[in-house]
Picture 1 (cartoon, rainbow, N blue to C red):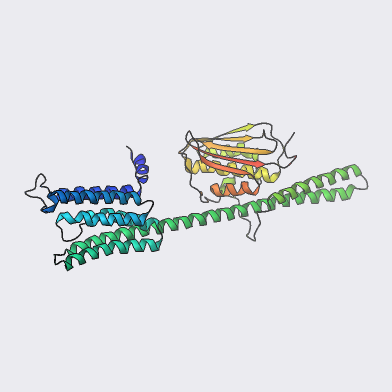
Picture 2: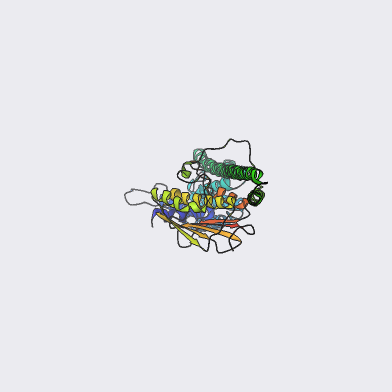
Length: 411
């Protein structure tokens, strides 16, 4: 079995499975200590009288049953599982003829402490640690009251391992919480950054449209008396440009622009038009090929005129998806499909045959985009649908469906 397949297999083992394994390993170690192994003149630990009798074996079997049942409860009822494992440690130590609970009998308890500290609330985790340490203290107290010898040093060593296991579990929980906060912060930052970029692009679109309106209005004013037909044509173009701009603004109502200054164009836009659209996909494929990834662009159906905001957003989704193929997939090629067959929507698909994984969210890279979170935000603002995930046959696929306003496509 390779290392890449063994690691996921280990991750599938439940805490209860690890606790059961720890108990059986501790039991085997206990037996080996009391047996003369090859190369030894005598066993490391002399076997107690009770362990060799039927009652000693019965107690060990009872302790094993308690431990296995506690391990089974550990995932569903951690506190109950820990109590059973502690009872197993006490019962299993009784026939060994020892002065304190051995470390081997506390291995399963250590696993349980780690699991509880890593997954449960802090108060419950503290109670679990106090209970585990309390059992060790109570075991010593009972022996003292009975007038028996006490292995204080051994008990302290066992208590130290329990505390270390608990601290490791708490550290794991804190690391997971920090990672979750970092992912949430990155996702929020990606959404905000993408909204700002959309707002800047919308600003450029509106400025361009208003420039056309101003030019046509000036031309109409100059010829309205001498060439009324030309003036009417200019007014019609003003009306068309104004309606398209207002429709785009309504679709982008959620993307509010702040006072942040305009950002410079990203390196990924080098060689592309100032306001690229789907017509620039072939140029994007050439740029990507220079980076070592071949892009095959397939257009399905008859393309028609698109509103500038939808055309630009469709290009940005494809651009970011192709960039992610170059950066994350390890594939040497990908396929871009632009489907115009639905008169009410534009369907985009970008897929590759790489490793089939992509970070979520993909963090910003060199200003070229904002990963899956940014693409989802851009499509959502256009009331579209977005999906990204591993392909069944391997690789990764991104799909986006952008609804088109009535009359946006050619009949």
